[in-house]
Amino acid sequence: MARLTDTQLVMLSTAGARDDRAVHPLADTLTAGKGTLAPALRGLLKRGLIAEAPAPAGSQPWREGETGERLTLVITDAGLDAIGLGAEGAGETSVPTTTPQAGSATVSPKSSKSESVLKLLRRKRGATVCALQEVTGWQPHTVRAALSGFRKKGVTIEREKNGRGETVYRSRGA
Image 1 (cartoon, helix red, strand yellow):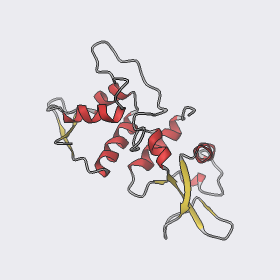
Image 2 (tube, one colour):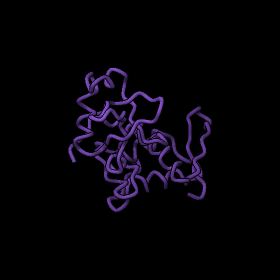
Image 3 (cartoon, rainbow, N blue to C red):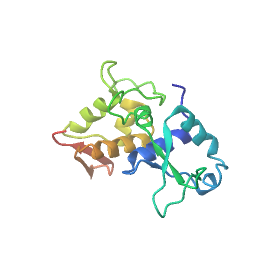
Image 4 (tube, rainbow, N blue to C red):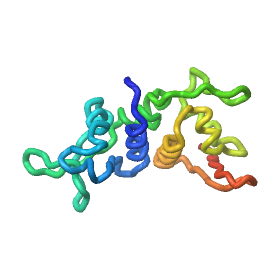
């Protein structure tokens, strides 16, 4: 799969963190598919990472269908896989990875990024967003979306501040 732009990654990560899986682009993209985000949305639609679905009552539609039905955009299973939140291929992501610094944890080629995140969360000291970024190569918003995805799958994730004032995430028995 071709690389995704930062805008597309933010859209997918945000949608992946929502219960309804809805993609909520800015208002200027919702008017007849025009605006600054429309090309990014069209690219995601073309790749099958998002799809049109009936819009819930009271929400602003992406567009109206030929028969007048109101349509919104939702992330697909392929979209969740692309950002590492899907059940299959959770570690397969088009997010560019960074080269780890000396002494940092690395992801084994045999394990997925999601498994590595869970491993760090299970540690007694837990993990900060920065530590999770270092292991996965993900942006902070993608790390947070992954944490939301784990919560939706029933993983209990605790959040607290450490002595340096950093937010630490920890999972017990996940």
